Every structure is written in C-alpha cells, then in structure tokens.
Length: 366
Image (tube, rainbow, N blue to C red):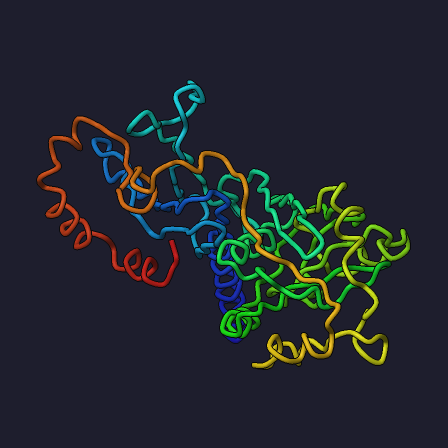
C-alpha cells in the first residue's frame, strides 16, 4: 500500500512540475521604448470570438517620447501601434489605417515571444542632439539600438532640459568628461533616485574616443550622470571601460572632440584625495550651484542648452490618429455602421470579458 502511495505522490509531483513549467513558458515580459518624437498609443489585440468577428484592439497605454512601457503578457499575444507615413513612403506590403491630411498611418504588429525580457523599439532611428558649452557646441548622435534603456533615459532628460547648464564637474584629459547633476535642485534630487534597469545587450559597442555612456557601472544604477570618452584617452583605458558595466548609447562628432571637448577645463581632475575636483555630494546640496561650485571651482566648464535637433517627421500633428487625441483603428464598413452603438458595445464587451482578462489588464498584464 505504501509503495502505491509513494508512486501516486511521485506522479502528482511530476504533473505539478510539468504544469508549472508550462505556465512559466507561456508568460513573457515585454518593454516598448518609444524613440518617436510624439506620443504613441499601444493597443492590445483581442482575438476574434467567432469566425464572423474581427480581432478587436484595446488601448492600454500611451507611451510618451523617449519613455518606456512594460507589460507582463502571454506568449502569442499581440500589440499594435501606428506611425504616420507620407504618400511617397507607402509600401504595398505595409498595413494601413485611415489617411488624414495627406498622412497615412502604418500599422505595426508585435507578437509576444517566449524567452527572456523582450525589448521592442518604436522607431529605432538615430537621434541627433546638440549641446552648447562654455567652449562651443558639441553634436551627439544617439543610437537607440546600442543600449535602448540608456538611450531613452538620456533623450528623456534632454527633452525636459535636465542637462541645461550642467557643470562638467569631473574632467580628466586622459579619461572622461562627466556631467549630469542639474543646477535645478528639484530635478536633480528627483531623478537621482530614478534608476533604470540594465537591458540585455547581445553585442556591446567597444569604447573609443567620443563614446558616451552613463557613469554608473553597478547593476541597475544608471540615473542621470553621463560621460564622454576624452580624445586623448589611452587604448588601455578604453579596454578597461569595455571590461566594466558601462553601456554606450551614443557618440560625439569627431570634429567636436578636438575643437571643443579637448578644451574643457580639466586641471581640477578627480575628487580628493586623487585630485582637486568637486565632490558630487556637495553639488547635490541646496547651495551646490549657488556657492560651492562658483566659489571653490571658478574655472569649471559648463554645458549650456541641450536640445534634440532632428528626428523624422516632427511636423506630424498630435491630433493625428494613433497619437494623443484620437483613437486609432482600421476603417471598415461595419465600423461606420456601428459608430452610434460603440459606447453600448464597449460596455457589453467589458461585461462579457472573462474575469482573468480584466484583472490582468488592471495589473499591467496583457
């Protein structure tokens, strides 16, 4: 009898493990990083309930420019979003929705796949940033595919003016030029603790002069401080950067390295006792920019205004479908006929949805 009981327990344990493994394989985490200069609406696609129905799209979140949106989902689920194309960019293979004022909306479908956290880049094109400085302008190319989370954070901070008038508080002519503590006390204290997680990178870009990365190498600690590899940095030092957890997200134009970056004041160097430079903790204090830096480090170089210079189709109005103010869905005769009943249908649809779907959506699981 005991032998049969042990055998039964073994079978139950095996089945339980199998079911748990199967459930784990079905779940997946996906993050969308928006590199388009307008808000983009994300929709979750509900499968058709019958052969007569069409899949339905439910808006789940609007992803702001240079920000991230993450979802716990299930393998096989689909998300869609829409980006505008001009008429001369239309490809017959693309899926479209409505046209408005000469713009046609391209539909992008993303299917959740199995595996480790998935990162999907919305419009992963290079973004150009210009930063003024006390010695002249530098031109930065941000590469979203290199380190998506880092690139998005840098552009988010540029977009809100965080880097404007930052002190170049740690410049070593054979190492790096570092900045990222805002003169705006509210901003610097808010974003200091808003760290981003490390993304999985298949091939990390090797360091060379002009490369930019966040200055935090401990796991999941990137926040605001970034550095530029100085033009006279040695090959050995760049190899050390490669061995650390620094993640390049862009680079400064070659010409600006010699004409501007090399001219930044570097003689203060590192913090004591290794140099005579400013102590970051003191810069974060309320009087950091008012008294500490100007009184103790009068020769420091400073960044000036940083701004995003170019990205595709910045003249697209916010009112276009798929962005901030209009709902986006594919046009059809059935939809036109049922416009008057949309509100009632939506209410009925919510009632008919299984409870698990409703609770998942509320928790950000789709």
